Amino acid sequence: MADVTRESLVSTLEEIALLLELKGENPFKTRAYRNGAEVVQNFDGDIVTRAAENDLKGIKGIGDALQQKLHELASTGKLAYFEDLRAEFPPTLFELFELQGLGPKKIKALYDKLGISSVAELKEACEGKAISDLPGFGAKTVEKILAAIGNREKFADRFRLGDVAPLAETLLERLRDHPKVSRSAIAGSYRRSKETLHDLDFLVATKEPAGLTRFFTEFPEVHEVIAHGDTKASIRLENGLQCDLRAVSNAHFPFALQYFTGSKEHNVALRSLALKKGLSLNEYDFTGEGEIPDVEEEADIYRALGLDWVAPELRENRGEIEAACDAELPDLVNLTQLRGTFHNHTIASDGKNTLEEMAAAAQDHGLQYLGIADHSKSSFQANGLNEERLTRQIEEINKLNESFEDFALLPGSEVDILKDGSLDFDDDLLAKLDYCVASVHNVFNLPEKEMTDRLIRAMENEHVTMLGHVTGRLLLKRDPYAVNMEKIIDCAAETRTVIELNCNPWRLDMDWRWWHRARDKNVLTSINPDAHATEQLQFLAYGARLARKGWLRREDVLNCQSLAQIRDWLALPKSKR
Ligand code: DGT
Ligand code: CA
Ligand code: CA
Ligand code: ZN
Image (tube, rainbow, N blue to C red; front, side):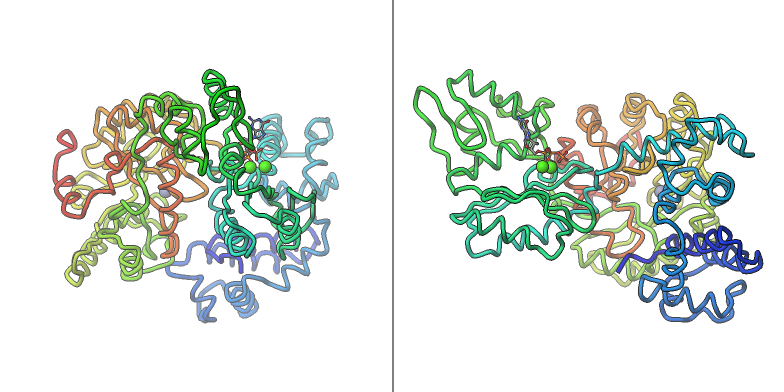
């Protein structure tokens, strides 16, 4: 079942309203859905659970019919009425809903006046003249629409790491459990922990390769068999993801694993190093004139070339081969070293769980502390807390903490950085918190200099412990806002402000390519799940993978410190940290 959230309820109601409008239904009916969407959006409480439990009676603006539909949606993840309605329109019409910056009003105008019902048609119209006759479609709007279409093309056929990881592991397990498989792995960008992937590259060692490729092409998730041979096969899953399988002998496995892990750039550099040693390296073995090294596992290949084994995350030809040669590879952080985490939400703002539930989940994860950072008042769309509610939450946390042994909730806030770089709360209130995460949640379109100055002003505040999701990007959806990352990192170093590594699979922000530079300037990170529900604490695993990809060690990660260490650290003025 699809994850039901407040946002998904709201967007379904809005889509229904739009579809009714496109059909020319009576405006009264349409308005009921629009109002309903607004009520759900602004409801002060856990509307998703209330809907799932059919407990919506008496909520103003949600009549009987809407109650029933919300209940069906929240309890089953589907709504028959909505699906029937959708079926009345060309399926390509719904592509338009996914374009950034194209609201329902515009979609209706395009459909009604120009009969546009797909992105392809829209693109054609934008490139021609017809569209400029429509009111509300000036040159600027058309430019924005074209940019959104460009983004969509750029992102087509790519997947977010966190969106494919659970399925990837399930398929790998199935291959691993096959009686004729002795070794197995997922190579490629998945093993290198890239934030987005084009396809998955499975690899097995087996004596019966043809049996394995057949087994693979018969997986129940298969939508289409793209290629099927005796040693390799390619399938496309129902979600559109392509998966390749290569079946090799046990002796070839380490070479295939090394080769198909990539990156291409890393492999090119490695092969040229091998050539200097008189060895030719390919996906099957070493060949050459002199003595051929014994290879049982991947590390033997690196060792034969005079290198330490290079963790897959580092294989991007960004200095890892030189470091491996000098035995100077970093001892990378790993998930089990995390002792706590910051930046988590509760039902007080837009989270799904209570303080108690979040605390219990954190303890299940073996964490010693969990930072609570609900939204601040300017984030009204996320039900941000005002001064009074935050003050009450601090008291609530302090009281709860008396009931824990060897565990603590840390009262904090995800405070909005306002347009001018000032903060949503004044210093007196911020001083009452254990820490604060400062984030941008609106006005994304400032010029680079202004956006950079805005973040710098926030970092200069003594109470800002860390910057949240520093570029605001949403992977495969929204580009980062314009900001000068060199300057942000320099300022973080100077002001001793931590930069978070936001683990939400949509964000994974700050980008891994910047961490090496940051850590060389002694900037700390905090690996933060930005959890809006207990199960999202699992996002920490993606954060740890991306931290490794950014060359980070245990000492570079604030939340590898124990609760006692963290308390001491938080008690220091920023300049002493
Ligand atoms: P992706 O799938 O676009 O997210 O990224 P990768 O790195 O998984 O790329 P993929 O699936 O095309 O190939 C997997 C690995 O196989 C790649 O990282 C390196 C290796 N490889 C593939 N084609 C070539 C090639 O033409 N030359 C070299 N040196 N290596 C290749
Ligand atoms: Ca791949
Ligand atoms: Ca591939
Ligand atoms: Zn945020």
